Length: 428
Image (tube, rainbow, N blue to C red):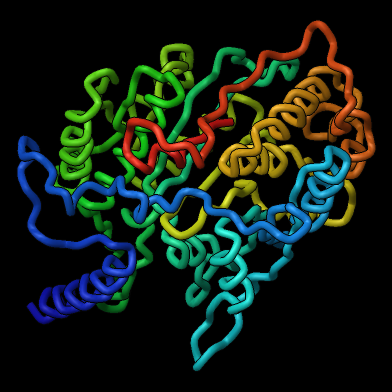
């Protein structure tokens, strides 16, 4: 009885801490309406204040200032490769490099203030991989960035790359992961010796916000199908609430087909045959998105070819999702493709598609050609070689057999008939 009471007390304290966090994210833990009820204006997360369409910060030379977080391990060298390609393609960007290594402020570990100020000013950042030591007391920097800038949606496109042979050549899915809560809320505690409790928190507001973003993304990128991925058969209340949110949002999108599927079955079916998922957007809670997006990345060649973007109210951060690979750092073996492709998502988000399209086309042709690719793709080129090869140059001549263009989202500064958050959508 003492143990049980202590556990309840610990859980109560944890939820109280989360309520403070939820308030910062603009969410609440209040009682929810049934699935059939219409969402109140306060519950709809699609206002411009919620999504923070790119505002930009232009310098006197008419270039946009963008925060660059090189990261750890191989991060600095792949960041230099991207910078070299952008310089060759004359992309109107001025990089402002910032280090996010935690510092102690009033006894607490936090991101340096100059990095926070930079991202608040530019409203957009490109981030290399960050290392988080394993063990108690170490906080994930990626999680800290998501919380600090309210990055509620993680967008992970997975599409087969023409010319790079994998067991599948028809992968073309988009996964959208709720980014602020679920099992990754960061609320864990030891109840008694030998018993640890980790809390999964799902709120209607956060679930509706990411669901609405997924439907808008599908509509604007002409994907006719949204699938909610869940484990509501076991987690009836938490995942059940996530599904309620998706069903409520679906009422506003009669033109989009909607269905629900269990995580286990989706994983099984995708690896058996990814083709049926090529027309859809899959939306899911945090942990499931982390696992399923990496699995889909494996179908197209790995995390070294997979872009990622995190969308928030105050800023958006685009990143390479692979690790920092300290074992090969500084050896010229790292593949910069994932960070480069993530940066192209960033350019489209900034309404600079002409630069993104040109670099993307040349990048895909280079991979298909196979002459300037790194060892993980079967080549012998160094990290720096692609940036010195012809492919990033503005006058790169395309062959008649160029890979087909990959879908891109609408310009972020042109409103559509959908809600204001529609202007946030983009795609690789």
